[in-house]
Length: 86
Image 1 (cartoon, rainbow, N blue to C red):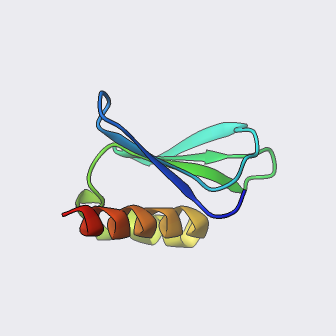
Image 2 (spheres, rainbow, N blue to C red):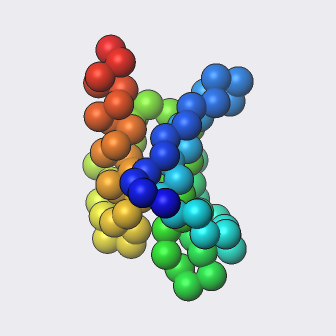
Image 3 (cartoon, one colour):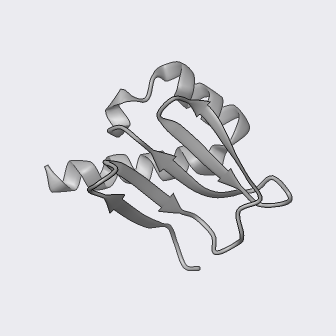
């Protein structure tokens, strides 16, 4: 896959950022509104965001940066796109 793919589900009010085409082996939930999909080797496949990026706290961002840097990059992409559409 060339680059991230960002989708928005209007019914769920959720963003999903697919980082790779790999299969999801498990999902971790660093917070109530943030889920990270991982492949079998623990690499980030995607990020689900059930809020606007601005609602993600500094602590949640620090956790993503420490444990799932690719998910933090995905969050930044959603922030960029939501700024463009404002």
